[in-house]
Amino acid sequence: MTASQPTRRQLILLLVLTLISVISLQRGQRDTLEPMGFIYYVVDYSNGLIRRGLVGQCFMLVFDRAHPMQAWVAALLVHKLLAAGVVFGMLLWLRAVIGGGGIFTETRLAAIFAIFAAGQFYPTMLALTTYVDIYIFAIVLAGFALAASGRPWMAACVGAIGPFIHEMSVLLWAPLALMVIWRDGLAGLRRPALLLLCISPVLAQLAIMLFESPAALATQLARAPIDPQIRDIMAREQMGHTIGGDLAVMAQLYSANTLRAAVSIGFFLLPTLAMLAAAIPALGRRGAALLALAALAPLAVLALEFDLSRFVTMTQFTAICCVLFIAQTGQARGATGALAFGRPACAASFGLAAALFSLPVIYGYFDRTLIGAQSILASLPLVGPVALGVMGDLGTILH
Image (cartoon, rainbow, N blue to C red; front, top):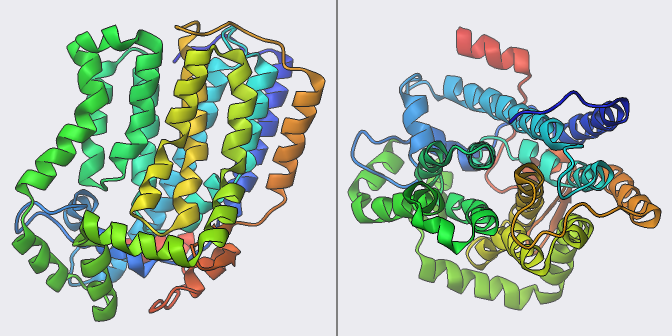
């Protein structure tokens, strides 16, 4: 991505958005580990191919399963570094496209980004320590950036990594595929590079489903140095789950918590809808439809997973990635060109961003809502928080 020197006004906007991003991220700060997700760091491929095993494979090349604390603190430290990297990467991408004279004016783009940065995505991303979501976000962000800068083969290779970390990467990659179609049309899929870019996570996921070994998974779970009760939960509900079983569980949750689920989804989806409302007027009908579909794609996972806000807030991430992709690729099919962003719309957007910015991190399940980063961990069953600072993390790893 290249960019001309920003004007003074653009520098001020970038500075404000940087401050919002950094402070917003810090709302999710906590020096604790998430035992429910730690299993992904202590399983590997030594007994055969297993689902969600790539992160653990990398960690087990460095750390000894017999001494899990070093892997624990390393996982927390890597999580924090990747979260900072995602924030920094987003700001670099914004810096590259703001004021580029494309579809979005700099004011409209800054307002959309402010809503994103002030929302619940950043603090939720940081608060869910040792979950592998952060790796998927980094992969998707890299894929968008590579595709927008004309490197489809590299983007396809990056996309193929995601399913080996978590199968939800297929859904989070779908927005990029839709944006490629928006830019190049369906005819663009005749190019092998663009076609592979769009479907590489699907091909990787199919390979995992065909060649994964249930026996290897059982062996790895048995060897994992975690609480036996947590091991049983993860074996039953995460690592060894089935689509049919997930659908049955989710049907019960929706039935028992219909109103609460609707209100929670509406609340966590508000920033995404506001971002779309600010972006869509600058697009044609076709572009608006594809942008909305791409941004909301992560909602499909709510048919299978019960961490409600965790997945709804991902729509804020996919929405801003799509908006920045559109801003960088410039005039594409269905776009009407730059459209002025009126003062009322500007005031409403930044006002909403200010309101969102004032909130603590909020985490919603189907049956309860947690407020504050520490409460997310403390309320989980079978979990005893372990307080560790960054310096403590480094000390334990280096010891």
